[in-house]
Image (cartoon, rainbow, N blue to C red; front, top):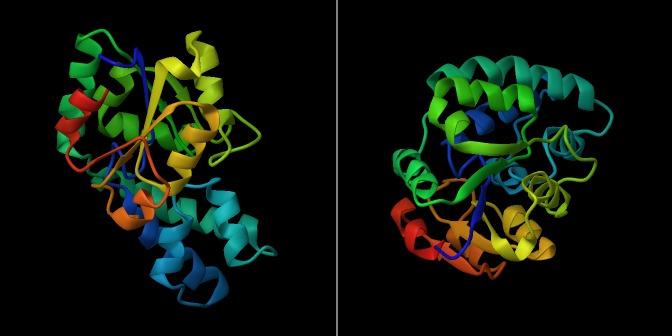
Length: 212
């Protein structure tokens, strides 16, 4: 065990939410703006400062409407949400060997609870949760990660942050945490993540047990 604290991103890291995020973003753009957004453009936004910032990129004058339509479409889709099976196995194993686990995500807490209801093990293993409504600044700023560490009474040097987006890696490095990129999210290409020079990069969940 190298790190007593292990923080995780949620979307694309613990849960396979990329497909429903893409579908809801495209639905919102189509319904509100009457346009088809480029999938590559949408993918590049996922995992960053949160939904409001993403919608500002689509149309800064209709953010509230875009957000409302997105959420109305997205939240019911959590009933069919899938998790990365290997991750649901790895999390309890980290806890069993004495590591403290937390989640730091760009989702608001209300939406995270939908994922927790779908996969109760996420709630059971998480000692701390930081969502988009808990800090003023968001990834790639390190504030959300530092807020989680403050709640745990831990220092950045004691912690790793595991995520599937370039924003996750930037936030971890900016905050002084060990940055772990994962290659199973399906949202960002491996090359995009590797370009951020994470401290470690894994392609299978069980590899985390050796890295962390």
